[in-house]
Length: 498
Image (cartoon, rainbow, N blue to C red; front, side, top):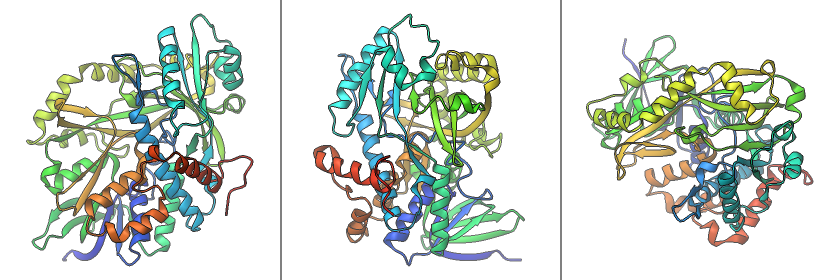
């Protein structure tokens, strides 16, 4: 029996937020292109984009201290926070466009207003937070940020955290009310419902086994369904958006840009509060400082979440180690990703990151009581019986050779594409989902340079600030903040525009 062969314009591998975003943007730009999606699980948004596998912070760099570094001269560098926030503004504008165009009906089903806070203890940390606050509040991207080191004020802001706290050292927090909680799982499902209505072929329970270049320059995918039947699909352009599963597929493509790249899997665990009385006492996302040796994605935070129209409370993440690249992956993922072209890169990373490896092993060995002790640094009177353990998503950090040396562990999201733009893969972790729109615009720019001029008016309709530096246009920032908050229903006093 011969394999069935199908040709299409664009193939998206993985039905997560990245493919959902790229597919939706392309459908708006070129409605007549034929797009096909392959997802190995039974539905969309089940892996890294799932609401229980994703912090949902709507990473806007409002509260994450790892985006702001103290420089040797004592000043605070906020350039990374500025970049991440600008990327988040792209997402907010695109989501607003979707609501305005009736492609998404109820924004409350995926985004809610929620204060973002940073909380620190100790004289040095308080001094750092104050400097960070001064640098950020002077920037037009972060209007309305407040700082307090007064325990009475903090009691108003975060009663659950301040109650029964022994105040034997200075404590301070910043708060900004324009933060959000984003349910990326719900958003992903909404976008795939929309794509389905636009005749995008979405195939669940279909695994991509191999990717090869054909003699006429197309990409041929060997795809297996859950009955074991193999089909061959060809496309002019392929996007690999399979979360941790992207690296093995990038390696199979054989493009030179995918060589000398490795992956290091880190798993996450959260504590979830099961007591509604406790959940009701906290209404914010509060980020602390990462422990020494911890990866940047392991910044402890106590988060209010809105999942399935219900308010939840999560604390974590506790980092863990598993050789799997996906929650639903294989124990041989890490081993299988080591190739002759990246083995020295991987070994160099291992030697360089012994403290990280040690930290992860310690985290894996933590008992529930030890995890409760860490939680009590946030909620002094937390009771063990009120909290359950939840396994969150797998993240694969990129390892590559950089100017900083061989085998450098990268924290962040990165697009790797072929020189001719015919294939692109998304690798990495946080801030991930929150920056999906700007990352997918980068894919479009890299991979379809010949169309950008013709597409630009439509891109600007979807993302009005496209191609403009927000920092140099404070009026535009104010305009975007006001209009996106109104359209997405984030102003309590203003009803969302329908």
